[in-house]
Image 1 (cartoon, rainbow, N blue to C red):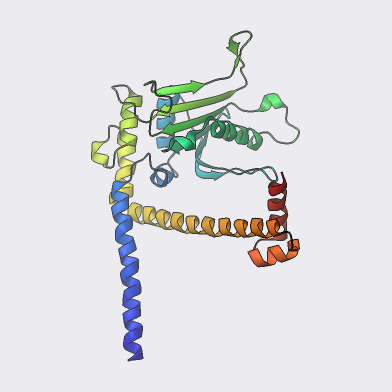
Image 2 (tube, rainbow, N blue to C red):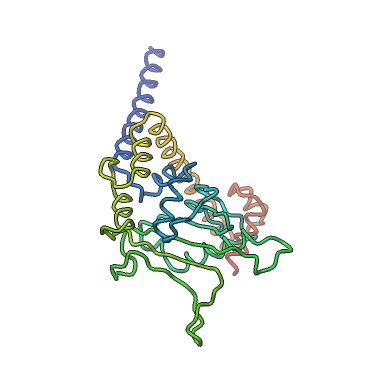
Length: 282
């Protein structure tokens, strides 16, 4: 009897696992390049595609990308907020390109663009270097909707000297790409492709071939399912970490616990507790 119950439990587990897999396959069919988890795989180890997309967006037809990383973790100053770049590339002149997919407008707040740009600056100027050695940076947000509502395909953001009306020429470039834009230009066709679920509906072969691989090739499908599983686990971990932080804040608010006790109860390190205490008192 016990053996039968154990077998039934195992069947139940397998059924749940298979059900999750089927849900992932259905979700994969509905994903588009403008969806973050699909974009993560789209540009992974694919310099030609990243180069192709950046050429269209920046208008630099001779742009060459020497390397491209997806989900690039940028080191941070102590206590500062870290970020993970969707796609991060470099050209032969050392210029840096951060390509971000932002489906929701709140993720494209101008302060976020400013922060992404500043983090790239910190990442690319080392001890002993002159400030003039900072490379030009391009922070590019592809947004599902028309963020500024003017119907423009791209909104370039540049600093200017208000007194002279001339460019500040600090090498910082921010571009907002209108994901709703359509038209006969390459950018219009590219935004169409970014919103397609099927490779057969796409204009550009490079985009279609990669999409077809990730959605139809068994190896590509397996890679995408693994990414979706990783993102679920990552989301779960983030939720657990957030709950630990809230526990720390509640215990600090109570004012009757030693920091060591808070660390022990919350499961965070003493260093993390001290950092949260500093944030609370800031």
